[in-house]
Length: 235
Image (tube, rainbow, N blue to C red; front, top):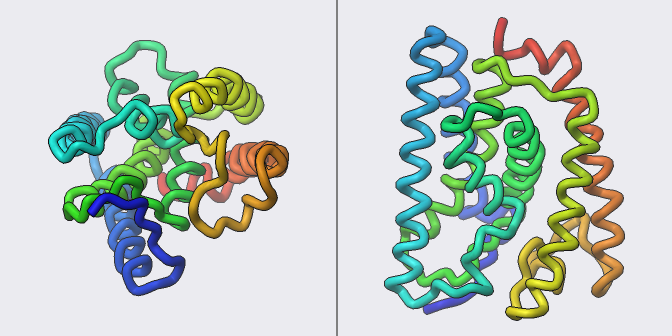
């Protein structure tokens, strides 16, 4: 079996998987809230090392199952780019730009993936099912963890810089999609799931998404810079 497996919104599978993902997120944030500064850093390192192992296994199992290909497995979706940033961000000196991209792309992309799950090239191997929810929850957890417990902040125009960065990626990735018959960032075809923000045929749904992404980035910045959320987990 080798299919693109969509999990129906609010189905029993969707509820179970997302409930466990939510528990995973809450536990990690509670560890940060009630840990010493020293342990916060150690936990983040362990978190990232485990993520790297899972990332390598993901590609390894696709390779041995014959489902690794250039038009599917390159990290050119926003969540794939967020995964790469997750693997390296704690090991570079200048983190601010990477953190801001991870914050917006990881949180918004991860939430979107959890709400409308689509496991491409699903072979029936339980690992891929688990990995999908684990990795997409993890790219939400790490930027939140760094924001609340590792003194990272969002600069004033971080949302706008991220919007420009995403559009630069769009310009680079769209011709790649057509050259290798891929659909990274869903720039060639809309995702094969029912999605409230995706409507119309190519390229009209992309125009709609531009406005949606612009609004979500702006909204996310102001939401997390509000006194309520900025200090919520610290108190």
